[in-house]
Image 1: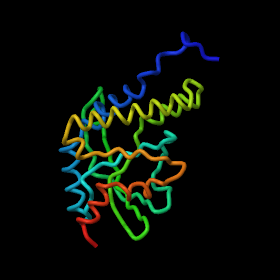
Image 2 (image 1 turned 45 degrees about the vertical axis):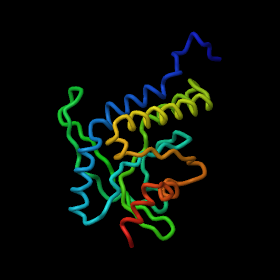
Image 3 (image 1 turned 60 degrees about the vertical axis):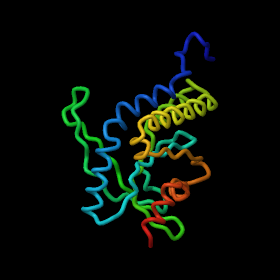
Length: 191
């Protein structure tokens, strides 16, 4: 049985995870480096991409190793890697994958990845350190605070969108095709 004094304060884990994810990852390449790499990809492969990185935030906090093990989603390639000297690592490589998705009659190529910090919340729950309710609360705090940080940097908000969804009901491609920015991209792209 847990006692309050034997556990660290988990009230801020979602907030801290959002800060870490934004400052140590997203802020390194959004938006300029990302948009530049998208333009390069489009030119090289003659494929139009939405100018956004879509970050999947599943309700279960299950961060799957592969997105393309789902019908209708296929890994294509990666954007050109961004190499950054950070934390004593020379040329740390940051990759973003491009996926081809099909849903109903639509086909789309776009940059997608899971919100990696969510898997830590699931691990805490699985290890009995937090309850399901606490995990859900921390996931909500993570998404709320990450969205706020992205909005505070307007260009980053235009280059990145969090996709919160119930992964026990919907697959990512079903959800992504309902997102306004993707619907607009498909309309503007034409047939």
